Length: 139
Figure 1: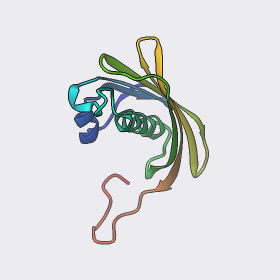
Figure 2: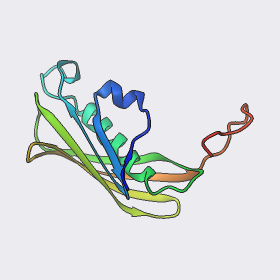
Figure 3: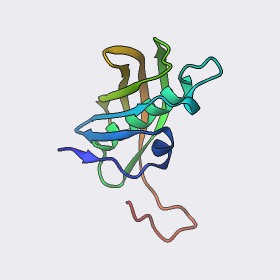
Figure 4: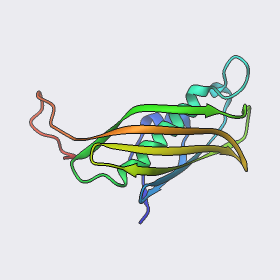
């Protein structure tokens, strides 16, 4: 079962499109734009990290129960090739979903070329209403 990911203003800022998630997997793509380049005129590593982190969360959300949420604990990323232009595709899969922790891997490619690979650990927790709000509509 495939689902369109929820509204994500940060993803929109990065230019993420074509986001699809299903059964512990997620995929999205984006175009490298001049404003995403670092002073060396290649894609900023923070952009790659953010895309992969966002896509990891999308993949994990497909496996969460109603009332559960997640947050990044840590991500280890290897930058393999510099990218100055083109379209990148991020594919992600949940390696292991435990009761409170999940391990997720993600790849970023330009065509067939692997440009970055990441392994992340995410916390899984119950969403609770904030103390100053009457309830959590998403729970």
